[in-house]
Image (cartoon, rainbow, N blue to C red; front, side, top):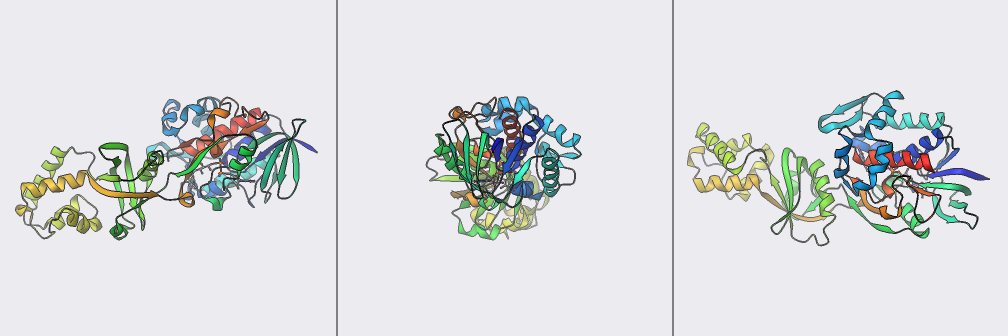
Length: 407
Ligand SMILES: Cc1cc2nc3c(=O)[nH]c(=O)nc-3n(C[C@H](O)[C@H](O)[C@H](O)COP(=O)(O)OP(=O)(O)OC[C@H]3O[C@@H](n4cnc5c(N)ncnc54)[C@H](O)[C@@H]3O)c2cc1C
């Protein structure tokens, strides 16, 4: 039997592609190697599922690598279309700090259950535990899909197998091999939106400490190669948290990451002069208190010892004993606390994959391959990736919607 459309992958992109194809009147068979749909969706937003961002459409594209490629698909299915889609189908949404959009229940489980129902309503035939190994295009233009449980024939195929990150969710980079064998160029996949290993061994002592409203820069020599403002978290290996994840995207682009410093500005809202004034006032107000105690108004308590060690200052000196030179050492360290970058964490812990099917080989209006007619792509398999904040799911939903419409 020849199927009208086979969607490979039941993640965010494949699910949306299946729904969109079914809504445009197609009979859809959706295959996935897992025992259930949306395994990565379950994990999204730490189990809360940051579905998209509530910012004006024009501001979206600067948040992506290869963002311009998304313009056509977003024009057909934007963040507001996605939000309407959820709300019209019974999912109430909440917009949180930073324009992040979540289901009001804050549960990705509810989103996966919602999609399971939608697929059923749309009569999408799901064939789970059926990993696809290879796709061949036969002389009559039909695709032969070689899967674990059967050989399946189809007029059109949507490849929505995701990237290589979090392989335990089923996304192991299979789609890259399948696409390459069909003649596509695969831009080398690298892990992004991931934490950073630091060379300083003592950083383990700061494990679990989080920083809010800091600016973190990646610096090579005199060049600032990236800067992010927000939250960071120290871990047993180094540093993570939203602004570090976003910074990993620029480091991934550097060929030689030797010598990169990670510079933390603990007080980005204050210029050096203002910070100095603030210190003078703190030291005057607390002239008899120890420096260790005074620093509690400026830094999380459990990093103060190490911070003062770096400043070569005793925590026991009193506010009224601090010299101008010591104050300026404190100002410099508060504005530019340097750690040494070692490497990015691997695919096991990366939120997304940079690289994949080259955008040059995909028609951005339809998601159809420019090389193999009838083959479509959707989601993270494409060489597009975004910052944290709902950008990656939105890209998966928009490209999935368009691929489903045209396939
Ligand atoms: C921990 C974590 C948290 C995240 N949180 C967010 C968030 O809050 N907001 C956000 O925007 N983004 C988030 N992301 C990123 C986002 O989840 C992904 O970018 C998005 O899920 C990609 O969707 P996709 O459908 O392209 O791929 P995936 O979701 O990876 O789905 C691919 C599917 O294809 C299947 N598959 C793969 N190979 C085969 C094969 N050979 N045969 C059959 N099936 C196959 C897989 O089993 C899988 O079900 C998060 C990612 C992670 C890892």
